[in-house]
Image (cartoon, rainbow, N blue to C red; front, side, top):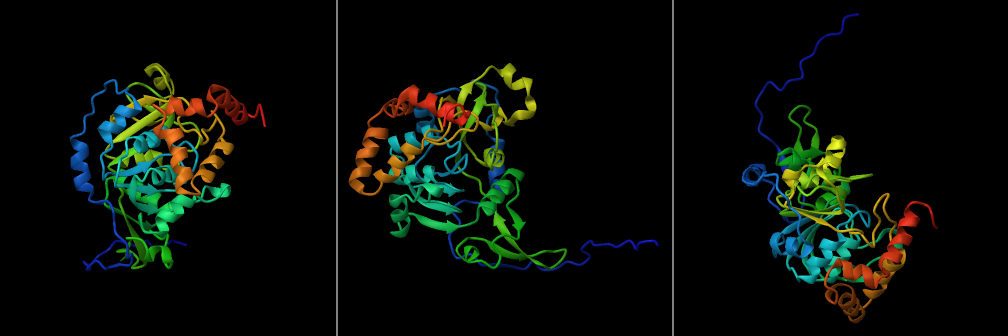
Length: 342
């Protein structure tokens, strides 16, 4: 039997049908051509980009900027940069809350953010809820637009691809769509309904990686979540790394280099830079200290004291590590991660 060959091409022009169904504000411009113009003028010089966290935050984090944070939940988050943003008292920042747990908690504690694209925030998974973060949202201190984790990941994907939106089926028929800024559209090939998810081009992203060279070529062990696309979607990029390695180490396994140097604006070596979170194959999360955070933000007074001790009262992230057990505690977390200790 010979199968009949069909032609599924669109033959007639038709007016594009789309319906705004999201009621909330879109915090960042999805115009891919405007973003491309910015990227065209970004330097691609292969130069030494090593610096300090303080210098990178001072130079690259502007009040009012919209930020994307790498990692996921309490895993491989760039804690050192988040602390410095609080220490520098940056204000009116926007955030992509792509399962933002401890990172959201830190920024809310420092009163740094006033708007957030939300997929998952406030809860530190099974550990409990951040009371201060919850109150900030409930009392309207932070403007919220809702998405799903998949939707935020695909918004990064659209930006990384250089397009202004990407079609998807997620959120259709849900209240999440109602509280988003998404648009319902008709497929030109099938006339079926899809959701148009706007591209997300953060002004700034910060990502913690396992190893990098001085130019910014980065490798990540284990799950990357959306960091491959986040790095390509963001206009400015701060990298913190567990260790700086020679370029020849990076070249030895080029297939593992997920972030190339020309995307990166600053590189900082910060051992244990995801603490108190987990860093895959490096160190386990400090569950005791995460509980200290949750207990501290039960009241404004205890939170202020906690921030003074752990962020404002120390010079840098190294000081924070030192007052929370120093290298002895870090060594114990490393043994736990490598299953040498329970």
